[in-house]
Image 1 (cartoon, rainbow, N blue to C red):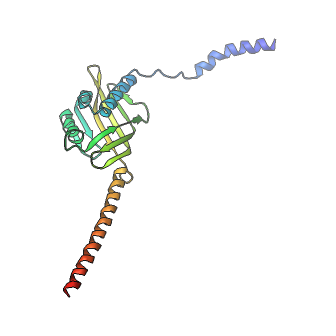
Image 2: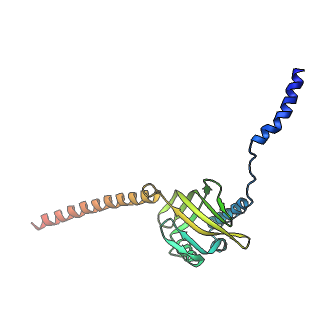
Image 3: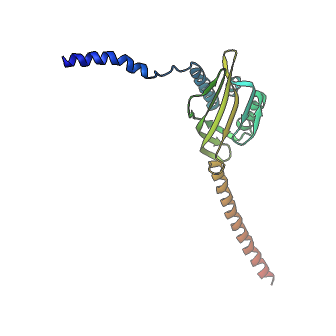
Length: 197
């Protein structure tokens, strides 16, 4: 008898318990569309294919690069990309980016704002290869049913990043070489002056 009362009490109380709990909200379909944009961007960059990258950018896009340079519009992005990634004078041999978001993008109608970090591997033409962890933020807008990047900002830590470490190492080696060259020159000058005396 007690068992039956317990079962009936559970059945009666169960719907009221559920009513007090908020069911998880369904995710906005825009997030899957934004994930597709992110994946297309990553694929375009990692395959060094600017022709697939540029159509993903809004006509008024503003990109702030790791080195602090700013490109306005797809034409300036193309110019920067070509200077850094293609041709004889290029700086970057290859790049592999692996961005992640800190949270789902904030949606404001047809505008999405996201931010996060990225574990990236750069192989430079003259300075070898290194890995960096950068921070980024991005804004996308939806026009004619398509999400496009309208703003992208990428940055490194001002005091702790592999580029500074490389510069420090180069400065140390340059100092050592300069000291050795100075010592050798001093030794040679001393021998020459003794011969003349």
